[in-house]
Length: 264
Image (cartoon, rainbow, N blue to C red; front, side, top):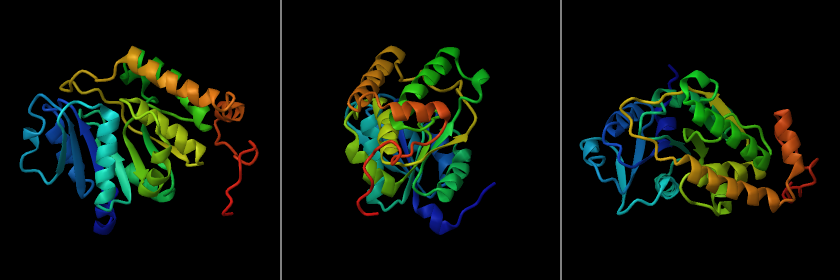
């Protein structure tokens, strides 16, 4: 297993949004704290014993008085991690779908490419993914990759490493902080800032004890589609991004006619 120094671990914080995760949240946090020194759980107005399940753990708990959606919970947790001085933030779900034991592999990729957003990708294990989710995720990948100008292996995975500096650059550009749309939009805006989007294969896990997914396929994909459509239309369909995505590459901004960085 990969090991990192105490100093590097304390510079990393895990952010875990949670809504009615009583059955799984304690185990997820305990396993996470074996990988990183700090964990922040954002309870999104849970109506069960999610918060009580965390009693006695060395964890920061933030609470929304009412359910505000995953985007606001993530942003709340990210802002707290930045306030605490984290230079990298790991996000993962509280239902056990993302194995915390994979965090060192994602952090290793982060250290190799410190500016990149690192994404734990699951679609290589198609046999372990419900067929409707697999097809929907593949469909979403194509459109989000087109808008981002980079190939994406799993645009809907919330198991990620965000560098603090990248977040500070990209977060102000996000305008659709609603539900699950945020996690798609931040990839698009990161791609437009020439931030690499790096995929690391992880196991595809759908825990038996986990609660039913909060993702609503029709409504949430409609919201994502509306956001992506506007991003593409506002740039004249962004054909360089389409060609780059089909080739499985990253967009060369200068070749695409984007403005060069005035600082050099």
